Image (cartoon, rainbow, N blue to C red; front, side, top):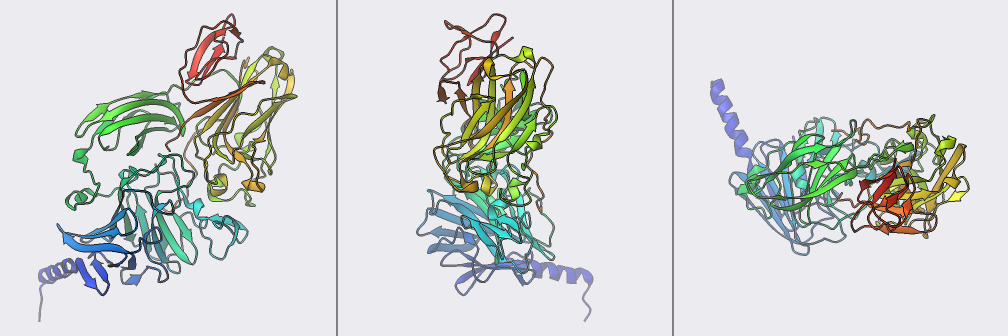
Length: 613
């Protein structure tokens, strides 16, 4: 019997569309997306127990796909709602509701996770546990592939064939982590995380977390909250929508339309019509640096990259702190209110000071990437043989920034040394500034210049998490300054030695440590010596398949050490005289506020004003 091509094609379309839907299969709901993906969800736990794409099973048989290690006993319902399949999983023992949604012809699990409290063990993540044998290529392969390895730290850092590996080495900054996935022959399985999905996560735009671990099982993650270098409390509410998409290998777009969620009665979902935006202009970010605008309050967080005009993502109504970063260094802060359906105008300008410097190593941008091993530590442990030797000497005028270590430890690796030359007319009181991005076990700088030794600053705020050994560098960020007397310097070669001070201890790379942002000596350059380092990018090195931070400043003199975080700055006045290049104001500063003849007290930031000629 002859069947015309149009009729045959119409029959094919009807057959394809008929495949889409949700049915019951034993103790599971079965969803056929009509796009090549068929999956099963347990009606008792909400676990995904089967993931078949183009008739190939990708779900590992030993472990399921779910939130955390599974929500356990749950109330699970499934239905067809407004043309979409919707599975709702209400945990009986956790404050979690998980949604799994699909639409016709689309091989994607659209996901959303609603929480009303923190969950045990203090982490919230989606984990797809997949067959490693047919999905062999992980995120940043082989950085997180631990198969066949031996543990060397904390049961989560391994050595494999002489190289260090860890699931922590698969991370990316939230601001860039919109697509990551694992691949095999003619297949890719991808997490897609639109910017809005992060709005009730924690940590800000520069937070990083685990994306993948390849062991006997290929594990694909999206971390919503965790205790990994945690800098702010958890946010409650809806995380998402996000998605897990199947392809024949190509990387999918990070742009996905999830507006259909508005018709599906998903707890916590707010459509764009119920949101507002902020528009304005960024100014004051130097050429070659990335600008980032960050909005946050206790309920939500948003961000966007910009060094000029910007319009924010759609934001939930409320009042937000609005911060500007040069790279990852906070350089301005204000507040703004957002109303539903409106656009608020609010520009922001950098308030970063630009003091006269004798020299600078690195750049103050909140990142250590230009320093020694800064191009490696995201993807390997400090002990890895591929690392350059730690410690070392930087000679001003001849060395490059990558001669200076990005981190120092109390009990291994040696000190960081800077050698510099001063002319006789530069032998005056000056200010030494060291910026750090993250501290472990109370580690902070101990400094000496020639025979002069600076006072030890107070310990930074503790973050109860390993840092650099897990490829992390983003903490609260400290800025330490010392007033160095003229008598400390000599005409000719001078030597600055930086070590680690801490009342705590530890073995090797788990001894107290800190990560450098940059180091500078503020004073009269006289055209003799200038910085030899520069930054042309502030983005971490990437080879991918595809926080809220609080600035703290410590001011140290040879006799007193103070750490301040609140108050006001009013340069000028006072009953004594501060020398040229000396401090004359700042939050918590109690010294002289009148400058010596020929100098003016110049505002640098809320924590530091300086006498400049």
